[in-house]
Image (tube, rainbow, N blue to C red; front, side, top):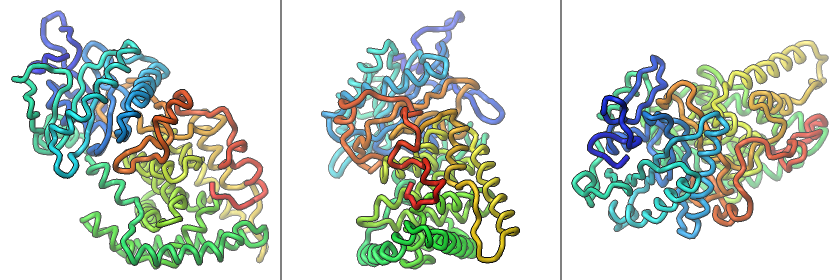
Length: 511
């Protein structure tokens, strides 16, 4: 594997004596891309994820004698070295067992540690600081009898190998990455119409609260007022239907307003424009109203075509307004943003939004189910059909009902989750938290290569950039063994965020 001059892959050679490169496929026309050496491997990483990872550890599974790309797993780098051992063990177990569940144990793993230098720090210093973590990952994978073929640190536009001792091949000062868009992987991705969506940090910034004063203070005050006015009505049998209708009308008016103002080419400027189009009061009323799950599930019906584009802008804008003490309220708009992104074939954006939703509220069932379905590469059409059916049934009921009466029938939230359970084949909830797993859209991968669903990372494994998590990953890893992404062994009705009979009775609920 360390013969970097020739190839990156298993040390064996084919009968002709030629080196065995890492190969990858999976584009629409099924071309194969051959990556030779650590440079091309490092440059291909953003195309396997759909974005440039920041402050991330990434594990890629390799299969077969040619080292074909298989499943992959990404997690924020824990800032405390005390967490590196349990996190490394859980990540290795996650990827290997996930591949086995999908039918093929990996023959090797490639490890990437991606982190930008801190102020006054060099890329080489980052590499040396993370060297013990790289070694723990190699040891953890080796303990499972799966060798790490390569471990690379990517920082400050350069990469270093933790496996290659040859200074001529891998100099101490690192090797510069090729300019973006010039690698063999970039050419293959351009041919397939695949685009990298920027850095993970930039993607998260579009969804995180904007805390500049005095704007944040005004927004938090508006949320206080909206909560005082609406929460008791959402919990009231008599008033919740009216609140639900008012919330959907407000959301529809804001979607239409955004549609009248096309997005700008610059993402930051476009988000600032969207924020200006929504008042503090409107944002607050809608955020609080979406805490009712049936209201949220009705809003999820805006999932296709141009309507989905405008709805996604609204959910992002609302997530940015969940400031101060209302951070947990962001779970609803973030989940809607993740759902719309997934429904419109933007899996990397979906994973980021759903991961942040789980950071805001690890018990948010809808986000957990969607994250599981996205990681398992399921077709969102099953859920789309469910939501279309709910909308059509409600429309028929509204046309035929008497004036002043409300629509009866099965609660929308229960139907939505039933559709997700049917898609995932689970009877219970998804695991409490899940790392990014499985290849993203357009990730070059051979047809049928296993996609590990991933073991849930320790709840809240710390990430310097705030990637999903809130509690100590090391403590969580020691507290319980890793679980596969899937059922937690309880029905949703048994969980704090479950639907259960609550939906049948129409009680207000945040999840």
